[in-house]
Length: 178
Image 1 (cartoon, rainbow, N blue to C red):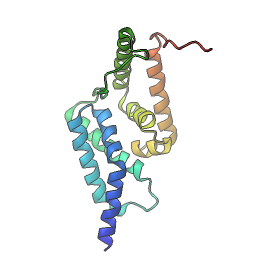
Image 2: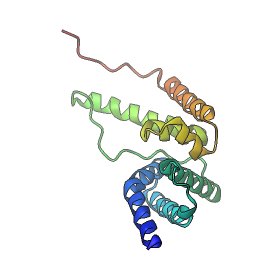
Image 3: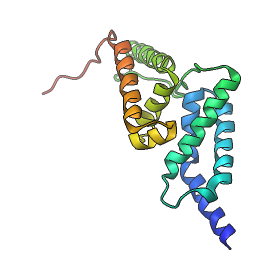
Image 4: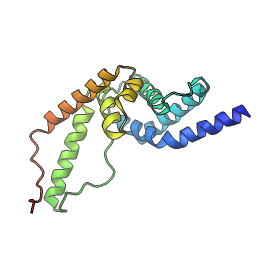
């Protein structure tokens, strides 16, 4: 009976978090097949350790920590510290539908992806967790096994580097206020 209840609880955790963990891994590895394998391994390891998880644990941060550790091991094993940021599948369109705006949007997106790819691994992970997944700094710190201040500093440094890399892009034209 207890085993069935634990399995039901774990199934609800998988249902609630699998998509987000997979997207996180996809953004950091850049390959759908690797993201699928790593997310599957994340939940396999989580299932094995689920009974030892304290009742008041932050399950989301715990899953991100498992996924992050698996990804680090994957990068070490494959000697791929710098993987491309996952390209957005949707064709970018400019704000007004003009071809020039579409080209500018594509250029900006490519530059942003390149800047994120070029970040040190810990900054890239912290940035992705915070800006793409909305994790709190405490959860990021738990996932990356660092302090909250270190997590905040990694996000700050990543943002600073990204902003510097985007400084020379033309400002986006806005409609005049009436």
